Image 1 (spheres, rainbow, N blue to C red):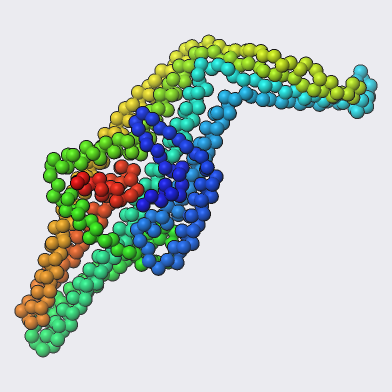
Image 2 (image 1 turned 90 degrees about the vertical axis):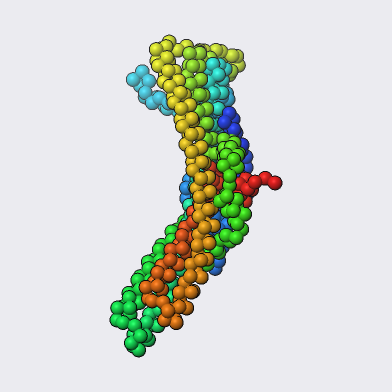
Length: 475
């Protein structure tokens, strides 16, 4: 799924190498219109949707996200700041006017109309030398815009992660509820058989009470699972903005069989090779590292800018002139000049500049340390996410086998119970084993999907198929 690339190019980060970042904001008003139009379309279309899948849930969450909308405004504001910095490098045009009229002169009253005068002046000046600070400040403004874009893209992946987890939570709780309902039916059937046998004297009062208690316990577990499922649906609806409860399309876990088998049985050599491959991608694509690199570039530019404060500032006045009006003389054009005049300022408070330069040098050193820390943290997260994927893949396969055995076991025990060859305790143990195996498979399966979601975030991939192709061995 590449929704953000299709809908809003301002969130699409170009290749962020550690030494270079770029920004592009062409066509922004049209993009803004498309973003809100698509948001409105998705909101209206899915409000009454009967069935929803994960892809649609992601699109809804993106369209409903207030945080992404705020980042869009922040990007627009940052772009305007960048334009202002560029405009400050252009010739500065200033105009002034004045007007006066007197009603008293030499202690005698006069007609204000006869004394009215007005003037208009215009000047054009251009800063021609600041020691290169103007270009540095423009670069800092560009870095700030790119930094906001990275924040927006990071929030984009956060939204995807939130909605993925919310969708998985609904499916997991639904599967758990289904298992609880199955065991409740088994316990109810066991109680019905126990009641018949108790009335005919085939079992004692204690076994009957145990069957009754087991049924009530299963019903309590079923009610708790139903409440948990309802809460998960509510969270999902709040995240996506839908009002009606849709049918949730189940995850086709059979499509993950190849990647599960590969990761569960991966060798140490292949695991090391995979880590190196993903680390190389992470160094180029990871949003946290890109943001840390931008912070480092900003600190470097600030340090360079303060060193240029020692240079003088030279301003040239290109044109200055005006036009006036007075009652007796009518229009006149006083003092129009079209030459070039220079004026400059030279800083002399070197102790202040030295202190400021040293402070920004410390900030640069600190940003270098922050980048190294960010890299180490992200690398550790990558290793942890891969280790979790390996472990969860193995758990999924073993839990599948365990559930298969427990399903056959509970069928065997139930048949023996009908034939009075198994006790209420045997049936209770079998149903407990079944529900535990079912829940274990649910947790392992959706935890594996969450580990894939974490890897997508670390590698800045919004398409799960691309990630799986990276995880599978290349043939």
